[in-house]
Amino acid sequence: METVTTSEDVEAGDVGEGDVDARESLPVDIDWATAASVGKRVARPGPRVTRYTSEQARIELIDAAVRAEGPVREVTGLADGLRVPSARVVDRAGWIDAAAHSMPAMLTDKTEPATGWSSKIAGAQTGGMLAFLSSAILGQYDPFSLDSETEEPGVLLLVAPNIIGVERQLRVVPSDFRYWVCLHEVTHRVQFSANPWIAGYMRDNVAGLADGDEDSVTQLLTRVTESLRSGKPREKGMIGVMQLLQSPEQFAAFERMLVLGTLLEGHADHVMDAVGPAHVPTVDSIRKAFDARRSGPKNPLQRLIRALIGMDAKIAQYVRGKAFVDEVVETVGMERFNTIWTSPETLPLASEIDEPSAWIARVL
Picture (cartoon, rainbow, N blue to C red):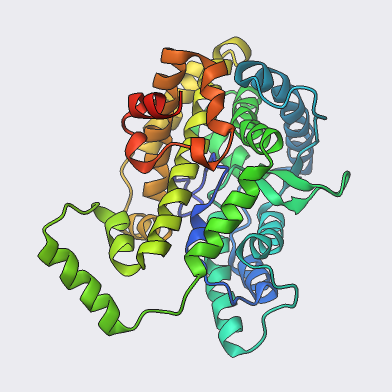
């Protein structure tokens, strides 16, 4: 995901999809009804638009999501022969409702809702985060919600108010920008549709993050002390903090999720740039404006919020993941690159993301 600032919101404008960040850090015992209610109550409504503009955007986005499927399948070589599903165009409240229904399916196998004051408090906290994210996401492929048409898992959500807000701010051609956004999100849909095991792999690793009892303060201090005494190099920033605070098993699950997200986002960005020039007339100006926003200055509040929910780490996923995919595809071609989707064992290791040649040597 990458965010851009508008005059109306703290942050808005996210091309994301895999979108695993928020889910990685959420507690399991959450009252999701409270989360949805609080989130919708505090979320900003989005930019002002006429009913006509809103309806035209909805129609155009649904059409763009269908049209994008063919070029994405052609470039990736994935999902050939599968049906082309439709997308759901939602407002911010609609995205919050969808997230509050899908996240429990990924976070836990429990069927009964969480109860008690602690769950409600966790729900209220989660609702605040959902409200913020609802203004920061342009689109999202949700592999855990059921498609109302087919009753099968997998729904592509497009958040119209955010897309309209960003295209206005960047002063880009709306029809081109909407199709460009759909290229990214449809790539995620193709990734999961062609490789259904990925959703289960995500769920298993989220379960690994939640396994075990909470560590005591003594255990955490011991882990930090041992790390300092060992003199071994440790990751910097938020990843280094997670490495210290989690058990080895939990950190391994966290790292696998991070690597998967990096691959999914990098692959989607690669496909956008591969398809864009032939199908989006103003793609160069869109990419230039979007990348400028991606790396632009943020005020202190924005920097704090981004750090807390991991958005800066998400932006790094785009950059590192795309560099990995670009090099592998350039070296061996897309057909051999697609070996990466065979199983968890053929996914890149954390050490291979920045050394694509190491993945090629190990897997191919």
